Amino acid sequence: MPEDPIAHSELSALTRRHEETAQKTDREFGIVKSDLTALRLQVGNLDQKVDGLGERLEGLERKIDGFLTEQRSVNTTLVELLSGLVGKDTTPD
Image (tube, rainbow, N blue to C red; front, side, top):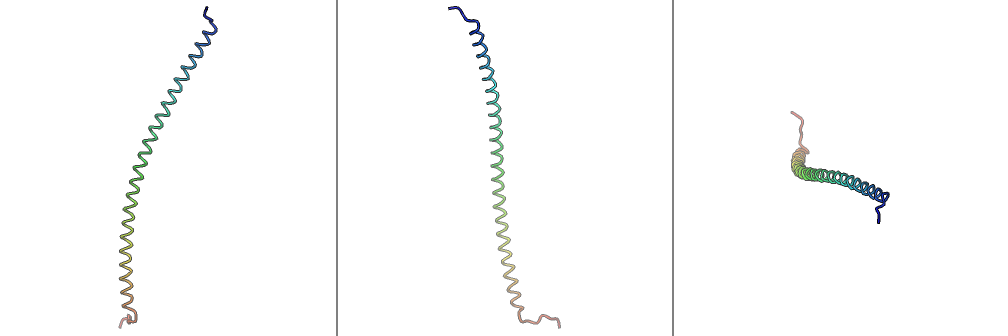
């Protein structure tokens, strides 16, 4: 059977288009893969920042608890002092 030049030309054109599309797909896949890698790094950095923020919040909670304990002690002392002054004449002589 003799070769059909039109069919051969069409087959070459289809092959070329397929190869071009495959190359474009490979490039786009590479871009997506690169973007995904960058995104993973960003998520990892955010995880570290969130962990650091959690630790800072825990430290702040401890400081607030300490402040509240100290404030309660001061309040108790003030109440005791004021209670001791009730009924006493505090005007200077």
